[in-house]
Length: 385
Image 1: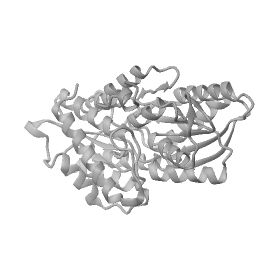
Image 2: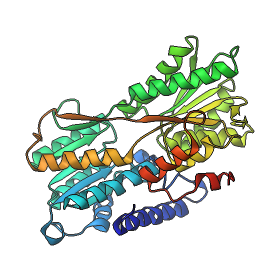
Image 3: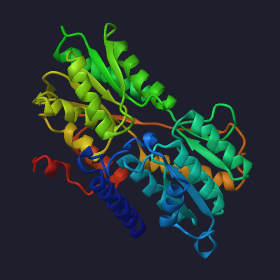
Image 4: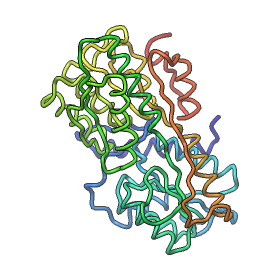
């Protein structure tokens, strides 16, 4: 299934992640080739050279090879497996359509993303796809591109003032389904224990906050009306930060019995904190003290979901394959003038709920292979064969 270019791309991702882990030292470890989050770069002081250096690793020419047009992409955070897979699919679909690509890691940092768009413009990029850090960043990126007459479409976070094409990750229905499914299972196991939730959020992303964090709560309360939120913390899409959030929950709200993470880094980080404290455990697939629920559908989530001793049992899985294909199709339509680069054109992509009880392990295995280029044998990893 994988072309040589995809293998090269994933090798680069893995090497970059290894370097990041080594330089992080005792700060902890972010999830690498299987999910979508960051070690929150908002606190860094980015320089313009960050974007230029990242782009140069992909393509240093001012035009594409053999005269091919270039499609640019600013990824939200390539320290997450989801975004790594999305970028690999982006490159594959562009190559199949006859285009070159320049892909830059935005590191969840508004300044880096703006510098990246400026760099892509300077490299004669014909269309740009970007997942902005937040709504304000989206506005800045759109205006920068439109001032240079370079078509740009946003993904997830959308500019609110300036009209521009947008790929909407429409997640509220799936997230509500996820919340409802989690509540039903908890009430099946513990009908006399009121659900008390903790949410590991990214409030800077309006779409994530509304269509994941708040929609999950709504889904839970549609089944258990008395369910309440004890705390909603900012995990910053970081494994380490989310682990710290989990430690805070244990100290301040030990009564929490349902934890939802808005991406894989969020849920796995919080789960690690609970496991270190002797919680986050299950017996025969039934959580002992709390149920963990994730988002992304990464390898590391799958390992926990199908481990009968882990209390992570559900996730809302994104499709890096379909999302990247939609991004490339939109970029080509923009270049061909089929979509007005200053219009409110919008196209939707969606997610799917996968869980321990209703999703056969072979089905999740196929999902990982098809979406994440996974070479892991899930059954073998869990000692099931």
